[in-house]
Image 1 (cartoon, rainbow, N blue to C red):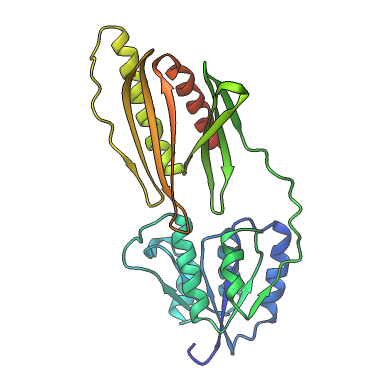
Image 2 (cartoon, rainbow, N blue to C red):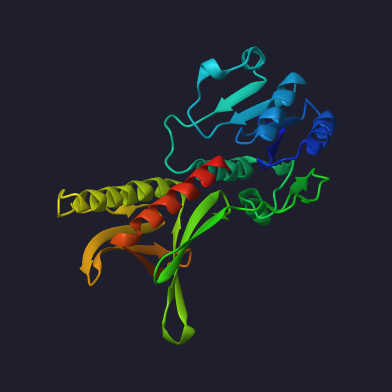
Length: 296
């Protein structure tokens, strides 16, 4: 394999079915004696491709982003391993980070050791689109322009006494996230808007803490505990989220404070307030948007 031309093959997870015929046509052009294809398995198109490469006798390197599990091999893969037609590379232990981050690191490693890069399909504004921008020798097989209609993402508005809370599911580079905005009504018809941004992992922890506050306030009205224990911070690579209850003129209120650092290392701080009388509305709105978010 060392003397053969090393070709990296990658394709976005959203590769349309119409592109698979172009991938097969490309495989048919490969010289088995002079070529080895390095392929990942993050997308269905990549898994389809390495199976077709093995089936047609092309030397293949399967570059996994997770530890290799022998029992997942097909009979065809085992035969290719015995013939030295297939090489499987994988880390010894699970790598930290999200699936998208691990796949991105794997893609960069594949492109670094390859002589050239072939891409089945590139999703506009996706991770792969950005990764191949700096690569000189890239061949894109796709014949399809992205004509998919924009997907309508769920949005829920909850009207409180002095403000409105808007829960929005937004599309990020790698996955969807939740934006929670509070628009406060001020004098002279002016308003101020502050927003919290939560990825899927942060959303789960956030809901658990909101549920804890909701439960505490409901029990307190019934004569239960009057002092709430300190809520732990929600900390991720992107943000720090703190919540605490305070006494106000009209009962207790919850302050949700988020500190987030952007790509330019600039720090942003936003806070949202919910009082004791409005926690039911906030809690219900949050549960509804998370239900819709998880259905996507």
